Length: 133
Image 1: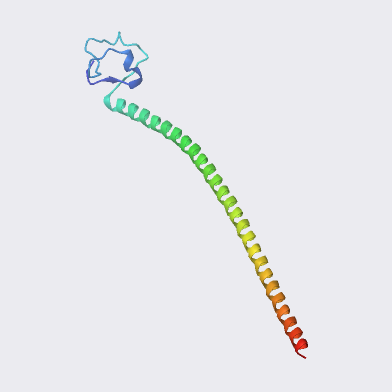
Image 2: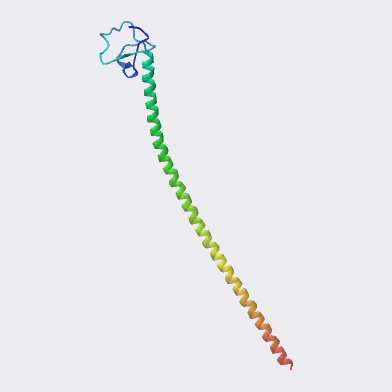
């Protein structure tokens, strides 16, 4: 058995290895459990890469779900903000309407007052003309 031959990642724990994770020469095939399959370096790399990919996929899925949740939360917050803005705008409009209404009443009062003043002047003129005769 050669040192370059490796086990796949899942079964590394079940075998005897040196510091470089290579099978020691002392290990014979009879000592290795039959369910552990020996793989070459290329196959080992493929296995590890595929497991990495699957892990990445799982991570990306979890990240996607978290992102979806956070997006939903953000959308809710945006809706709330829009609602608040609308309510504030409505309140401001009501205030403006009230001010405009007051202004109109003030104008009407002024008009009434000026009209009354004109009538008073007119009546004073008539009174003075009558008194002078």
